[in-house]
Length: 101
Image (cartoon, rainbow, N blue to C red; front, side):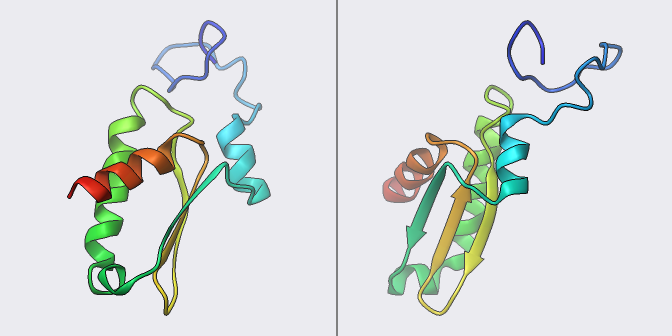
């Protein structure tokens, strides 16, 4: 935590809160996502790899500014994909990215 806000660790900074889990890590440990994107249709089945890459790319864009925004899990089944996130805003951004393309 840096100035009251969760942030990525910077070399040389104090690790006073090293034993404290951030809210995103607690969600992952508890398997309790803040958001979910569900993609189930023939397009999803035909383009799973591309859709996963797009979701991961959106996560990479968000992470530097919002360290608590992340993908917890991407589950594939016979019907499509389910993407679980640690943040409530990331699913919307993933959905908008997929819709735009």
